[in-house]
Amino acid sequence: MTSVAALWRGEVPLSQVFWNWFVFIGLPLNLTTSVLFLALISMERPIAALVVGYALSVPYNILVAVGVWRAAGRPGVPPGIRGMARAVTVAGMVLLSLI
Image (cartoon, rainbow, N blue to C red):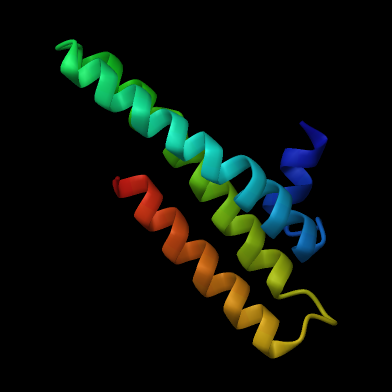
């Protein structure tokens, strides 16, 4: 739980938040929940589909987007990297949350 709190506060280095939490965990998590969502919808289980598709992935996406945003604002992060990391993460998480 300590690492989640540190992520939320922006205390985790930007490269670690972006690559580990967003790319290597977030993308597979969102793809998995999307596939499970579609499978549950096809089995006519809409409540379970909503829980799997949104209740699991959306809070994670918010956590990671906030973590990247705050980590990008730390001193020493170049402005170009700051803007790119924020834009890619927010756009990616919004897109993945809606799919």
